[in-house]
Every structure is written in structure tokens, then in C-alpha cells.
Length: 70
Image (cartoon, rainbow, N blue to C red; front, side):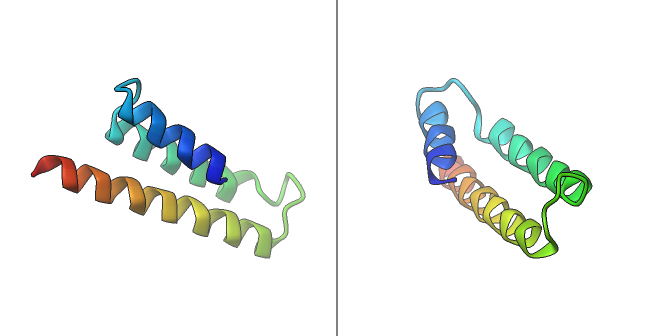
């Protein structure tokens, strides 16, 4: 997951991806985990960990968005 977060931040730094788009993508990923996790064989514990990681990434990106407004 660290690699994915680093990639997102790298794409933002290179202006390939906006922070808003990245936050939206992370939100979509969280929705997919919530909607399909059990079907994919994930346990509730695994889904909760995945959602917590995605939430942390989203929060990190939101901080970046706030910092860029100043």
C-alpha cells in the first residue's frame, strides 16, 4: 500500500493527477472494498484494515489539498 500511496503522491507532484481526483479514486477504492470484499473472500477484519489504510491515504491527500490552498 505504501507503494500505491507513493505513486499517487508522485503523480500529483508531476501534475499528472490532481489531488481532488486522487481523493475521488481513493474513495472509489473504499467503496469497492466495502461492496465486494466478502464476495472476494476477505474477512471483516481484512476489509476493516483495508478501509483504514484507504482512509489514512485519503486524509493525507486532504491535508495536501488544504496546504495547497494557502
